[in-house]
Image 1 (tube, rainbow, N blue to C red):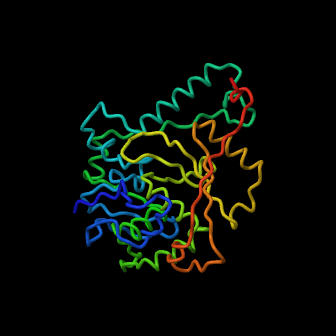
Image 2 (cartoon, rainbow, N blue to C red):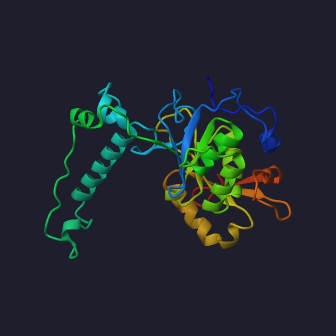
Image 3 (spheres, rainbow, N blue to C red):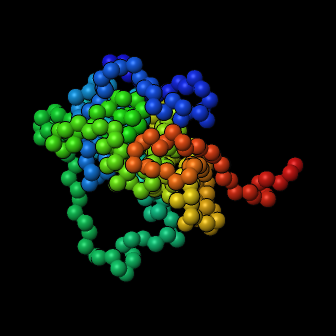
Length: 301
């Protein structure tokens, strides 16, 4: 199996990607991944019996014990390359630097000086070494790859690269997956349309909850790469509660984290029956880049 989900090469214009929505992009007849539906966690757990890493093949999923790419076994048990730098190491160093800056800044209030803090110190956390972890786990990788519902449905519906089982190991059809995902995710059809659109353009959309947006766009194939764009899905049934103040707040957040805010409008015809994925063929997508105009920075020279 030599499936490579990304990049997806379209022979038509990116705007007409819906014309190819119901065509298989891969040439393999058997899905290369299998996973189990976890409804209470709104995710799909991939099994470890795969030769192809979904994260390496297009930034699909995240590790259950890692920040993004599943690296728990490499970090804790194998440690083949002692000089290897993982995203978790970068996060730890960044937090140490921030903590040192706060301690060296006399103007910042110390947690120990607050009146509500207790005088008792917290016990130190035991850190297991690689040998102890290997003995406890018998060298097995207990980390799972988690797919959100957008990623899972894209792999099932667009690429035919994934088969999903329920907790009783019964395979789920495309229509069943659509029904379950729609029941657990508000406006699933609308947001999946945007997810599929950007995947078709070669981007890897990831959940953007911590930035207050729907998706953050990454470039597949680049580890530790910065997400350049933050996408907010807009449509009649979603943007009714969003006003100018909300947009300015989102733009300020995106500016602070060096991202460009993109308003992605999903245009629907007359009221659609979204009970089946066939409704996606009538949707259209338009993008608007939102930036704050500053007279000092945008003054004519």
